[in-house]
Image (cartoon, rainbow, N blue to C red; front, top):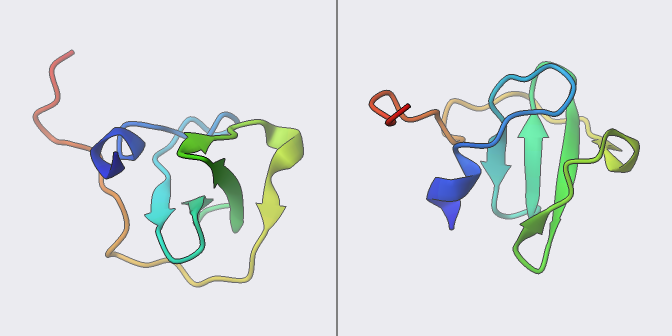
Length: 69
């Protein structure tokens, strides 16, 4: 499932999100906001974004370099 999350982007800035497993959130470090993942389903709705005070981490999800297009 985490591999699927690595393909998702923020609905507003269209850039990659980081999966924060301990918080069950897909995190946008550029905007310092997160999108909840409920029952394994990400709620990528800008109105449902949660403001967070988290420093960006390099350990989060990364986009796959060799993803087929």
